[in-house]
Length: 232
Image 1 (cartoon, one colour):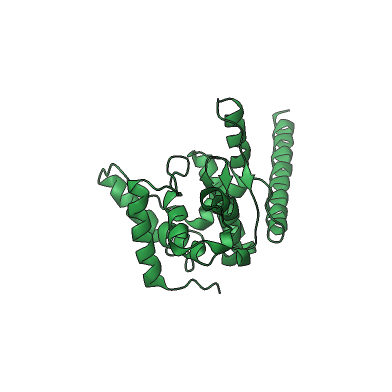
Image 2 (cartoon, helix red, strand yellow):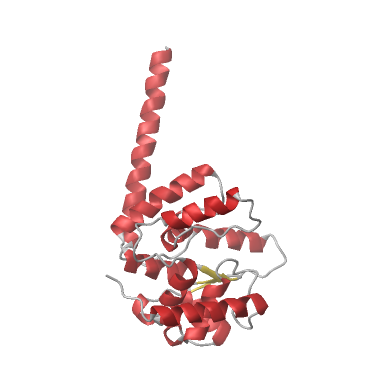
């Protein structure tokens, strides 16, 4: 009796695993070519707005990477993930520095999440810090690095990232903050968007507060040292 129950549970788990891998790989293959229409975070934020006094706002206009100023990919790499072009989804050096800082008891520990990890989380998962969600994040990061490649990851990232309350992606952010298109973002404007990414619902790209203004100056300086960002 117990043996039969065990086999039944195993079959259920096996089928669930097959469905999960099939759907996840299938979704990754589809989103390699098709714009991501909406993300779990967008749905969660809309739900939060419904149950608050804030009006429901969702601005998200997908544009191709060719329609985004080259300043913006460079700005987010300089700000968020300077090893983006070289790592395979995870910045092991940044992870080690974060661990060492935590061991030293640092009050503010710089996150080690790469652009690839943030993209995987934004498109496929929900916000949170549980080990289960982190495990899924690792899986989806490896998957998109293998299926999409760096250029597509950057394109999806810049179109899906939260850039303000109800503002998602480069085009919506450019229109909201400066009434211009993502293609026309200046170096300073791109740096401003990159500067607010750690907490886009707290900070404003325009007008920038003291913290964001300082970050803009630092990011622009880094962009000057990099020159250009070339995808392989």
